[in-house]
Length: 154
Image (cartoon, rainbow, N blue to C red; front, side, top):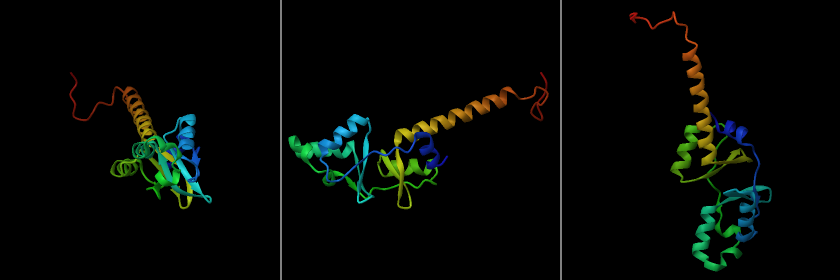
């Protein structure tokens, strides 16, 4: 399974924010949309990624003033990205190695979507469930006269 297939299942809705917005505004958007990340866009291109991890780091570092911090100050600049042709096992390894729960998917300079670790787990589970059903159907429909070679009747 490729990353593009996960995006096709998940959908390609993008949640974005400008880097000059405040962290308070970003948290409101994340909370209202029930998402854990926002892609930071400036001048029509991705310049960063904001996740709840960066928000919590800012809360810890800035105390009561965390809400007024600009997104640009806390976002991950030039985040690691996935390629739509990447296989899921490569994607999982990248996300684990880079300690990333959210990964933008870029096709050249075009942002195709964001994949979360949850999206990956769901896609793998659905793929395994499909394979399991197919194997069970294959076994169930196995002709009775076609016993494995070398087996003895009881």
